[in-house]
Length: 254
Image (cartoon, rainbow, N blue to C red):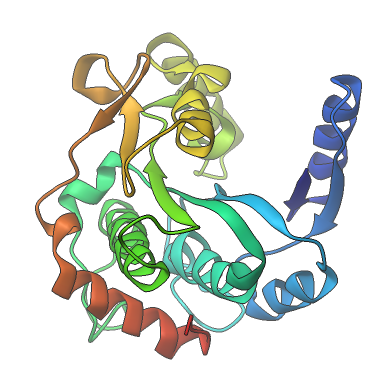
């Protein structure tokens, strides 16, 4: 298992936990908001990859930019994983998992202004756009890998409302504590939120299955197959998002 991380300390803690569980794991430095970091990380990998899970993501309370000047949520949640997957695609021999969100259902991709340089930025709009991009990118990727029994298949998952530190986005300790207190009551544990991702990574599934919790409003519960939004199933929109990724990252899959 290879578990790259942006934060070296948190990455090391994860490796320690994996080693205690007797997992064969190694770490690495990877910042998805910096395409030079993505390229450097990919250059260090030589062995084949059985399953590639694109799990990292970010939410920001104000508009920020990546190292390349992309809107940070688009850069981290879509463009970085897009480039990573394209650069590693030839080494993947089993499955690629893209972790999206039900927020994609309210998403709109503005190809003319994907970075909100001219239109009004909000956390909800930028996050939903990035996650709709993930849904459509996965669809375009599967078309490129092949349809009719491909060697590598693409799957999608979302964790519902999982209690992780992703909700601590205000930067104000008191507010973050208040948000965490609320989330701890209503959200499901992070380990339960990981089950849809694990199912997408390991279960026998039709290509492009979308796995999420089966409970109220798909926020909690056990993993099940779910239907994406109509827009997330649009092949033309998927191709447009793919071309956006190619233009922004300079990477592609033959």
